[in-house]
Length: 240
Image 1 (cartoon, one colour):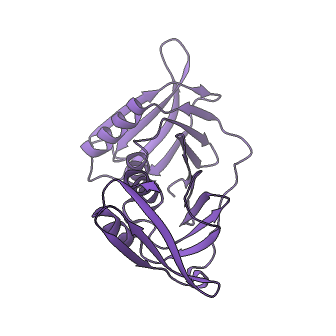
Image 2: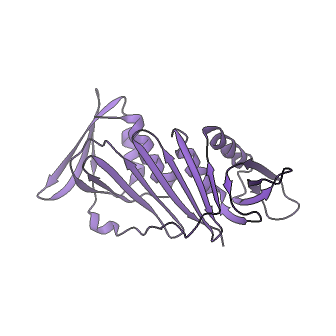
């Protein structure tokens, strides 16, 4: 059994509002692992207590899967159907509905590339739920602009702080700046990122208990979020 809200939360964390539609679900010793993304933007999602046997499942259309699951309620029974060694269908059942989702051949989905940590991170922040809410609001207020700068500067006491700056790069545009304190080893960093992708990641992880953000001046952003059963990790490369 798995709760519908937990399952939809896991899916939203890799789907990212439509960015990653085709993925493999890997289940090993009750742990579900999903890699997704493309060059410049990748993620790994893990659920530590997933109620299925060891398997590799090809999900060709996450959007359709989400639509099916959306009509269910409460706890779901999840089961698999296979022909010989090939998994062909995934079944979901609640008190009223019995749904069938057709799986794809995992070979047609190809392989995922993934990133490793850079040699060092010049910035490490704890991201609280309040920070997530404020950053989402800041981006939403400038929804038509997808530019975001993550910078390090000093406050009036000479302490290094992080600033998230939403808005166009021209000097005549509207801007919003949000400050977060953390472990910041260097001031003067200024790296651009896609704020639409950043917002999608934050939106899909609002339900998590804690989060961290790390930034390398080489241009790599790493985000991690944690709850009792779910962990999510994202690497996002800078805008060119």
